[in-house]
Picture 1 (cartoon, helix red, strand yellow):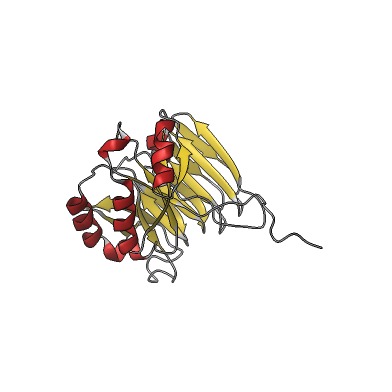
Picture 2 (spheres, helix red, strand yellow):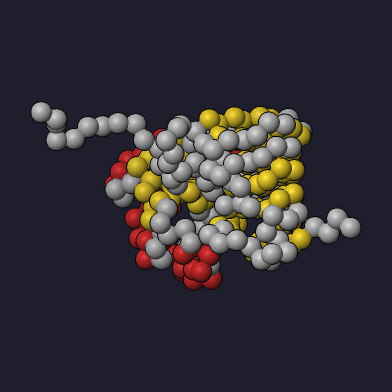
Length: 238
């Protein structure tokens, strides 16, 4: 007879939000301004990254989590490099995820690989420019830490490429591309054949549930951040 339940390993689709203020009015105003954008992410759970705060007493964690929930964003965990925050997370009925202080900023708002039959194969490379000359398959993730990333092959659906700098993809881009992962708002994404599931620059995301217009779909494009929004423009090679 099978037991009532079993505990097994699992991977979770999640985003992380770094909190810069404890002011509820300021948070409310920002959420109101971005409500359309954030509604696209309402089906995903969030980690609340509080690395900017040194003292747990300076932040009403439960109030902040409740504020995000009212806007459809579900906070399920708290992240900080100091484990003294763990009891405060528990008091707010949140999980606690310890963060490495030296890498916390580069982990902000990163999309975790969604559930797939095979485990994610993550590869982190740190050098000025990272070249990948093989296809990046479904379930794979490549992160160019403190570097630009150049991919000469295909990026399949369900694959993810991340760079703290710019991203260049010279094959069909069908997965997710996240440039400026450590907060570089000047980072750009250059794609030879635009078929991406998601693109992001410095944490500003755009999902693609439908094909782009004909002059952009499967065409060379450039993705940049302008005035808090992503701009996708055709690259005229002639």
